[in-house]
Picture (cartoon, helix red, strand yellow):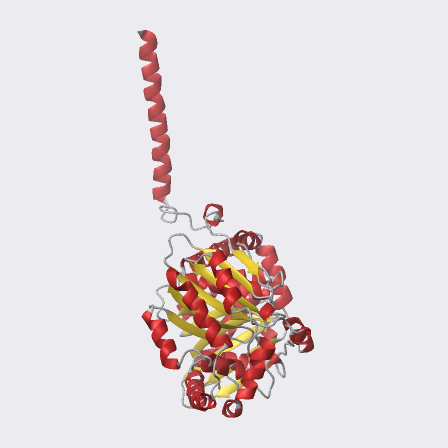
Amino acid sequence: MRALTGLLRSNQQGREAVGCAAWRQCSTALASPFTRFSSPAPTAIDHTPLLSTLPDTQITTLPNGIRVATERIPFAETTTVGVWINSGSRFETDANNGVAHFLEHILFKGTKRRTVKELEIEVENMGGQLNAYTGREQTCYYAKVLGKDVDKGIDILSDILLNSNLDDRAINRERDVILREMEEVNKQMSELVFDHLHATAFQHNALGRTILGPVENIKSINRDQLVQYIRTHYRGPRMVVAAAGAVDHDQLVKKVSQAFGSVPGEEPSTSVHQLIEKEPAVFTGSYVQDCLPDTTECSFAVAFKGASWTDPDSIPLMVMQTMLGGWDKNSSIGKHASSQLTQTVASEGLADAFMAFNTNYHDSGLFGVYGVTDRARCNDLAFAIMNGMTKMCYDVSETEVTRAKNQLKASLMFFQDSTHQVAESIGRELLVYGRRLPKAELFARIDAVNADSVRAVADRFIFDKEMAIAAAGDVQGMPDYEWFRRQSFSLRN
């Protein structure tokens, strides 16, 4: 009996000890407002459980070189299927600059099997969406359809790409449409500034050409130029058919083989590798201003030469872009954001908006910051931007890097919720890497970034390096190029 009583007493004392320890832990947490809910210091997040649930990418290469890649997303009822092509304004000449974008418009204006009306009705009847876009190095034609209509989507895409009429009357009508589009694009300051930025950073280079092309080319492009561009660049090894969502890989491969089997293989003289080797990207430190007297805004971009797609330092630059961040005056965050540049710009009211960018190409890139402000504040904003970028060369904390890596990996995981984003990443990665980059590998490379590697990469791309600057609007208050150049090695806070 005494033994039982002693056992009960010891158990009670143990529970009291555990309770006191729990109370002390709780009271300690409640005593600090910073640790009441979580610690302000970020910790690295392990995404392994999530990565293991991602679907595998199935890839099949057809005899003519076209790659068919799919990711079947569980429980998805819709599919994004598209054709990604290694063609764009970079692979044009001064004489036909704008032809790739012109094609994007004219291919939807009727085929040998479908009129414009029949094409639109067929897409609308199945509740789908048909769209396209053109970049400097890639062109994409894609459709969003229900899972049961994937074959129809492929049939429509192959029809517009391989059997378009390219009617002279439609071409003449489309000129006015593109010229109006150019007017609207030039009214968007961000589009105007980035066109100027590429033109000055890659002077007399293919990457410096605009996507829409000059007005005189748009007015003179003819059917022969369109046909010749298709024959030269729409080749099997330069095309990827990618699909994500409710899609069966084997069935898609069979359909693509039938629909795109007539696409010719690669000509060695016009391969992407040969064209880039013939006209490589050459970065030039320079400054261009476009004074627009009718606006009170001053928009500008500062860019250093960045990394190519396959450069190992492209991953640290992604982390650095996240560290710099972005902000606009309508944002709910600002003064308490994790980015020190965002804190400075928001608390001191230096800009209406800004964003860091990291643009990759086959053999070059652009890394920098774009900002929107006015004449009175542009000098202060320029100093804040240059100080924020140069500071990464010598003053980087592991806390900042860890937080940026968590944010970057989360944003990449968010893309998995969109079939369009998944299909686009498949198509782009197969074109630039030659393979699908597994998320596990990408996250491992992101996790490998630390403060030391950020400083080393910043030293390679930023410290005492030439830069390209483009400004548009009310630019009278902008500093000159020598001022920006000095800031690239300034160690002031």
